Length: 152
Image (cartoon, rainbow, N blue to C red; front, side, top):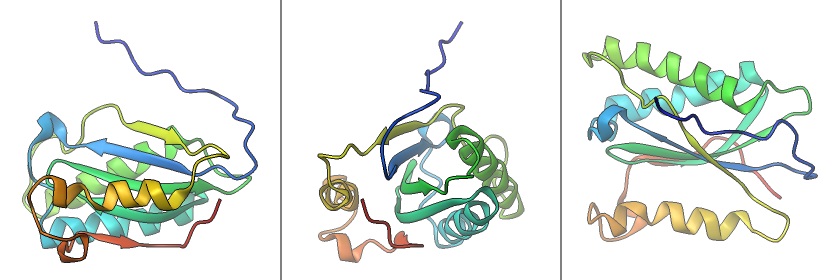
């Protein structure tokens, strides 16, 4: 039986910014297409509004996606926000011709601490396509963007 990742119920940080990583089911390289990447970003905008989460920068890789997010005081739990987004994006992927599961069941999150900065974490994330040999510079990677500027 698979053990599930445990999440803290309460974290005492003034401004919570999370780096979330979501992997495609079976790590299949299906995400970095013009149509699906646009749907993933659009769903982040819509679900973040409904869930009271601000979404900052994001990068869509072929088999996973990174995004930064920050809750409003009355936001739903991170796991509920990500679950809702996965549901929406799976339905949108099906309309584009994808079949079966789109996402792995779990996701990974990292809470940026007071001594960490958003900028170096973004620098690491935005260079993922370069490290993977998909482009020469981060600016060449089309599947990235920012929905709302976030600050620690």
